[in-house]
Image (cartoon, rainbow, N blue to C red; front, top):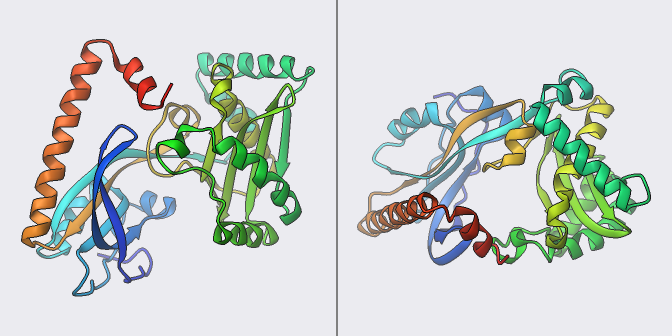
Length: 313
C-alpha cells in the first residue's frame, strides 16, 4: 500500500461509545493511533499506510476510509481485529464553475424552498438578509462570543458535546488561522436577533465544514440552510478554493448541496486481546439491538417523534 501521507504514531485515548441516537449510555476507553483521512485522501481511493503501533496501544482508529479500500487495509494490518463503527458518504462540493451553475444544478424543489426561506427571513429583517461575514483576527474576535451564545442553545452542544469551543487553545488557533487568512465565518440574524452561525477553517484549497448551529427557536425558519447558501455564494465568489468538505457523517443539507461524495467507513483495528474481543462483541451486539429498535420505530411511523425526543424537542 502506498502512503497517502505520514501518520503520527502517538496513541491517544479514545472513547468507544454505546450510543442511542445522540445519547451516550456508556463508553469504554482504548488507546488508539488516530488515522484521519482528508477529503483529498478519501477521494484518491488509496488506503493509508499504518504506522507501527506502540506495545501499550490497543490499535488504530481510521476515519473516512474509502470503503473500497477496507479489505486491503485490514489485510495489511496483520492480525488486527476490524470493527466498522459507521458507514456514511463523505460529501463535498466542487467549486468548479460558477455559483449560478451550481445553484441551477440543485433540484427545482430545493431551489424554490431555499428562495422561499430566504425571502421569509429577509422580510422579518427589514427586507434584506442580515448576514455578517468574518475573516480577520479582529472580526473573528467579535464573531466568537455571539456564535458561542447560539451554540449553547443547540442540540449539537447539549447532546453531542460538539458545539463551538471556547477554550484558550481554540481561541489561539482561531486567531492564528485568521492572521494567515485561513478561516471564514458567518452569522445570520433574524429581526435583529442572532439565529445561526457557521465557522469554516481552510486547509490548502479546501474549506472545512467545522462548526455550525442555529438557535432552536428559529427551527421553522431553517436559518442554517439559508446561511449555508449565503456562504456558498461568498466562497464561489472568491474564486480561490477547490472544494467545500462537509466532513464525516451525513445529513439532508449535505446531500442537497453536495456535488459528489465518497462512500466511507470509520474503522477500528484492535489488537486481538481477550479484552478487545469482548469490547467488540459488546459493541456489535449493542449496535444490532439499536438498529433493530430503530427499524421497529420507523415501521410504526414514529421516527420523527423519536428524533424530536432525542434532541429534547
